[in-house]
Image (cartoon, rainbow, N blue to C red; front, side, top):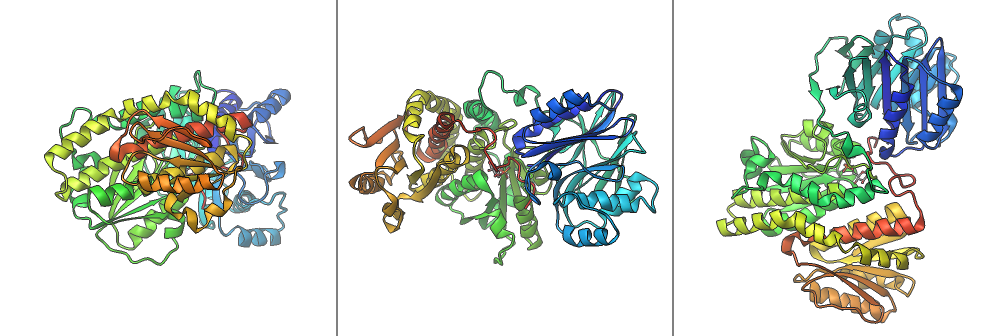
Amino acid sequence: MCGIVAAVADRNVVPVLLEGLRKLEYRGYDSAGLAVLNGGLHRLRSVGRVAELAAQAEEKKTSGEAGIAHTRWATHGAPSERNAHPHISGGLAVVHNGIIENHEALRQQLQADGYLFTSDTDTEVIAHLVEKKLRTITDLFDAVRAAITDLQGAYALAVMRESDPTRIVVAREGSPLLLGIAEDGHYAASDASALLQVTRNMVYLENGDCAEISRSGLRISRVDGTLVERPVIESQLSADAVELGTYSHYMQKEIFEQPDALANTLEMVGAARSVQPGLFGADAAEVLGGARQVLILACGTSWHAGLVARYWLEAIAGIPCSVEIASEYRYRQSVPDADTLVVTISQSGETADTLAALQHAKSLGMLRTLAICNVPESSLVRETALRFITRAGPEIGVASTKAFTTQLAALYLLTLVIAKLRGKLDAETETRELIALRHVPAAVQRVLDLEPEIKAWAQLFSAKHHALFLGRGRHYPIALEGALKLKEISYIHAEAYPAGELKHGPLALVDKEMPVIAVAPNDTLLEKLKSNLQEVRARGGELFVFADADSEMSDSEGVHVLRLPEHYGALSALLHVVPLQLLSYHVALVKGTDVDKPRNLAKSVTVE
Ligand code: G6P
């Protein structure tokens, strides 16, 4: 989704702005732009890749010591050059992430004041509004503060002015923004990865903060002007972690990083003899132990992780659990229970709907809250009573892979901790479960070794237009995740069904053009699943079955079987998603799609 980079330094900042935008490309965008101050305001915009913007900058020899830059993911107005940021009013330029909800009313007022709009965006309203404030307020910082009191919605923004080339003003409400402190100047960005090229010293702004950066300093205040201090944090993000290295795509890299990501996430149980509530925070024993039910809130792949966890929490910990899509929950009239543990799951910790759903749950009096998140400095982590940070490392590919498996590892730990607090986990089972968890990274590595066979299957899929994924029990959410991966990156229409539902509709779609993928580990539902697969074969459907060592299934006419090396009990969901990730990746490669940046999608969905 949209990204911001801003810089004021003792150097030409254009290369820094462009490199920052490249680092934000993974979030998903459809156009890019930048503006610099250098004896006037110079703006460049392009529909397409940051590389095109860089080529323009090179050709026009654009340079300057203060600048703002942006990658845009269209919300208001089509992806086009006229809608790309920065937007300009007078000698003022603005970049913005988020959505201004009252932009139409503001636009009408500003048009009545004589401002001419040249784009369809909500952002242009901000440019004109600040310009208007500057007619009565001389200082840019004060004018931005005044302007944002008129805004409703979510924003991170950066503003600079031709007549004041030594500083940039930024503000945040709802969308992430941080400052970077370097020896040669000060920087701002929507994501730390954009600034690692110049500094590790970051200042995370809070909602309602405005800041002014110049070469020599920074100043942060609340909207009302009260000055505030925010701590300087040394970012632990590894610069290497966001490099592609020897891989062709981030998604491929991230699929193969899963053994390490899981080992890092499970590091704290590495030598432990028991699972401790403290894994989830200092007050975890009280917060988790007193919960009577669990409500999981998430979006996309993170929602699928929640769906798997429901099977675990109810079967192993004996606690009732419901799982809701955050964008639905936040607007639904539900029945709150103060003793509900609200678990939010998010890779980024910045997904607008997940944040809003959490706030909604809290407003209903549910204060036992936990975030399972991959970004320690994210908004989500700051807003929950408890937290568990998955240690997947930065995930760049839009299609989530290692974040999902590490979320599952965290949710399994949560299940064991709650089971223990509820007296449902005897010492012998606890030891056995810990041994199983420690073996997960090695087990995932053995599944990755099946890549050559999966690659061969991918050839058979690439000409198809539809695919059906089937699973039962806790493997039904894995089928959902497999279908999501395939549609996200290969654009093949894919649907997932619990296999028992087949005859209630989807069977009508099955013919020889419809590949059916079955997630079929040897669990108590395998025999039932086999009957469902017979129903598919009888209609001429071609089956691709991901079985395991104990499944006793083999290839036959129209049935392709791949065995995962070992059967993994309750944790099999964690293993079985991996071949589905690889299948989507290889199908996308055959089809030649943009694997890491699929069309229309964004990595971090910071707007509603
Ligand atoms: C976007 C991403 C998905 C992700 C979802 C939720 O749609 O493309 O991969 O699952 O957002 O994101 P979160 O960061 O909250 O897990």
